[in-house]
Image (cartoon, rainbow, N blue to C red; front, side, top):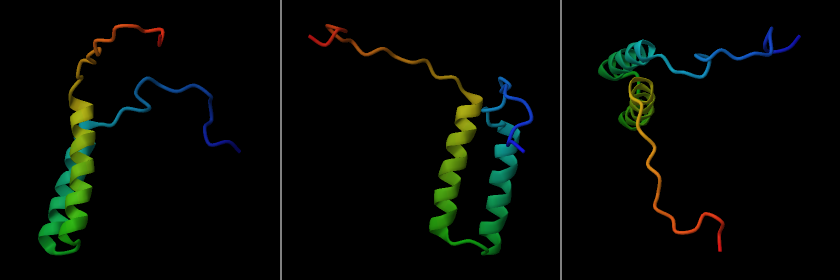
Length: 73
């Protein structure tokens, strides 16, 4: 049996849900307040979750770098 039932991917399949990120951050805060995880682990996990939250809530514009020749000469 394959991992996926169908071969197509939805447009939202690779998107991270902002509401889910908020929930996970809140759970992480509770674990840290209860002393269940160390400070370093808390900071690493929170940094990753904040990045995912920002990716899901913003759409930055890609800036093109000024390049003289695109053909590599």
